Image (tube, rainbow, N blue to C red; front, side):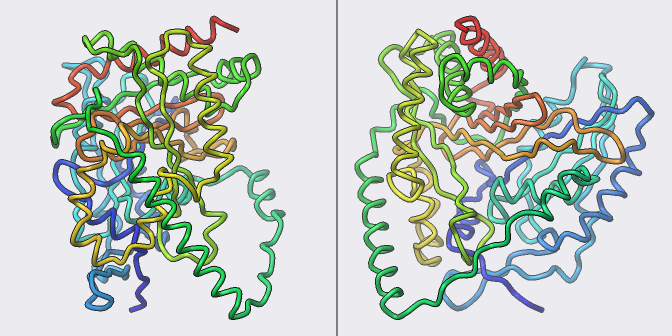
Length: 437
């Protein structure tokens, strides 16, 4: 049975796993349908497609050498249908039961002795249609890889998108490398790692974040949809990228939410870790995760929405000028180069120190403009969810699909019983910025 080694970063995600900090990503996909939905039939279709996706057949296996390493191998007992469930909701006691059900679902850890994914088809939605809830462990893949898996489960891309994929430019042929090239690369890599490590130490601060929290296994999920057209109008009026606009909206929302909870916001920032995919730069790198990151101080202490956007723009411009391989936010690249045995020994302790470096994660999941469907039903909304880092109260993931900006909020339920307040604050913050156009 062929085995594929996990990268050091993938092993780190496995080592971070614990009951109060499950390290899986999630997504809630909402499909519209005017016909009656047969959830069991949809689950059967998904099982047939999942069985054909190699990543979903694999489970991890600890290796004796190198010490602390692990590999992927096909599960000889794999049955895709055992990872797929169907749940029928009822509106008898709650007019919109999906958020509560999804909150319970996201909190359930994956069984690390089996292939690291889980899928639930949810029917009985009050607005009709159905939902698909997907969990993938972060050791298996990052957000970009999760999209690739998801597309394999759906009906597929449009004909135009498939044609575009076929006509993509071929990858360049690498030039032969000399021994001198190898030595130069090794020296450059060592210096880069030292620079990242130094930046990480310098960026550490006292853990006094207003969005830190004691560990808890309970979760709350929130769904927010913004108009893509509104985001583009704001961008055209004030400059920057759509991602800058979303970060500024979130800064305003976090400001209002904290003030309403009796927390001080003036004069403060919240430092967001913004993950960055380096899949196009990673060459033949082994592993499911191809990640770096930026650290962006969200200006929650600023009341004016346009000034908040200007500050976010400047911060992200500096990050991009430095590139994803430099600065304290590039610590995933550093983790990639740490021997796996050190992750086994120290990653859980290091994970608890996350608040020293950043206050929350804000990640963007790439989605194509193509129309996606399942069983002929169009995908209408998709809400991604990022794992909560240890001692963090809130994590935010964003997906732009069709003409909607879909924001998935995940919170520590004990620390944030009022996640609806943050959801409303996002909508209010977006409206305030739009009113300046």
